[in-house]
Image (tube, rainbow, N blue to C red; front, side, top):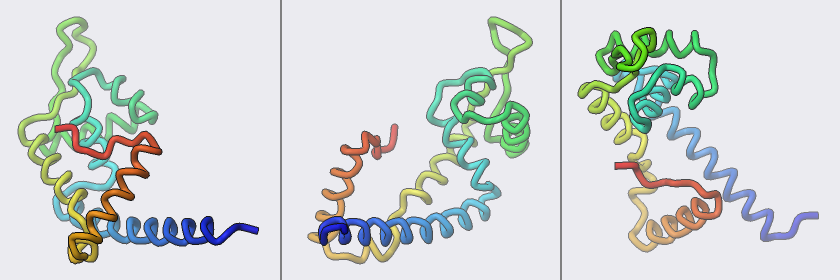
Length: 150
């Protein structure tokens, strides 16, 4: 039988997951308004966090089928978020790079994702600081980098 501490931790975690799921549904709706599917947004975020490189770099990073990457990159390129450039080392290889528009799309997307739910923002400062300390502790324990890379 689990002790009271484990039960409360599980209850807290389950609630946090449900809140996060609800928030991600809201985020997905906002991304769709921007013309981005969740998958396109994920690819755009990965491209924003990596150096320009060949499609194979993105395939490896995402651990998906190369054909699928081509399809998503085609859509991002049509939007003007990504450009394919010939590799200076091998003309058969195309280098993927975010455009200025793609960087702006990513910033907008990141702002939407990182915006705290109003229910959290409406807490008093002490509650927010306590929540932040707990979140930082969990992030450190999980070896998760939670701060933006810029």
